Amino acid sequence: MRPSSSRARRFGAFVSLLFALAALSATAAAGADRYVALGDSFSSGVGTGSYTLSSSCKRGVYAYPWLVAQQRADTSLTFVACSGAKTTDLMANQIGSVATDTTIVTVTIGGNDIGFSDLIVECTLADCSAELDSTRASLRTVLMPRLDTVYSSIRSRALDATVIVLGYPRMFSTAGCLGTLGISSTERAKANLLSDALDTLSSERAGFANVTYKSALVPFTGHAVCSSSAWLNGLNLLNTGESYHPNRNGNSLGYAPLVRAVVG
Image 1: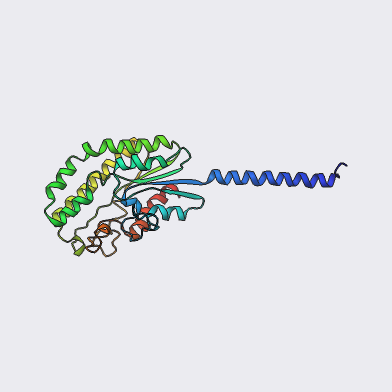
Image 2: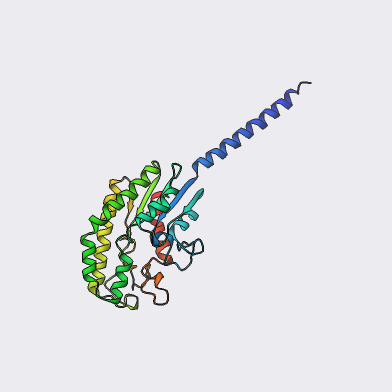
C-alpha cells in the first residue's frame, strides 16, 4: 500500500525537522569556544585561598580563567596553569592542551623564570636592591628567547585562536604596612621598576608573535599591597605561599575584565 499524501507530507515534515535540529546542534557546537588557560600561579589562582580544582598546582574556582569561563555561554575550559611554572614547564606540560580547535588561550608566564617571588622573599629577609637591579639589567637577555618560544608555539598550534598574554601588576605603592614587612621603600620602588620592565618586554614579544597583550599595570593601580582596597596579598606569615599574589578581587575585578575586554 502506498501512504496517503497527507501521511507523506507529515513524514516529510518530520524528516525536515530532524535535519533542522541536527543543523542547529552542529551550528551551536561550532560556535562553542574552547578555552585553554596556561601559565603560572598568577593564572592558577594562588592567593585566592581555595584550590579545589588542583591542590598540587594550586588551581581554584576563584581564579580568573574559571571565572571567565563561567561568565561566558558555550565556553569549555581546559585549565592547566600551575603554580611555580616556568616557560620550560609550560612547554613540557601545558602546551599540549592547545590544539587546532582551540579558540581562546590566556597565559601569564615569565615571573618564575626570573625568580620574582624569590626576590621578594629575599627583600623581606635582607637587602635585595642589588639583585633587583641585576635582574632588570639582564631581563631581555634571559627572558626574551623564552617568551618568544612560548608565544610563537601557542600561535602556531592554534592559528585562529584569540591568544591573550596577561602581564603582571606592580606589587607596591609608596605606602608600607605589615604586608611589606622588611621591604624598604627603595626595594619597593625597584621591584616596581622590574615589573615595568617585564611588562614592556612581554608586550613587545607578544606583538612580535602576533598575539594580544593586556597589561595589568593600570587596572591594578590603586590596589597594590597596603592600599585600602588591595587586590594583591602582602606578606602572610601564616601562609607564605599566599603572599604577593592576586586575591579574589584581583582575579575577579583585575584579570577577568582584561580577558573579557577581548573575548566578550
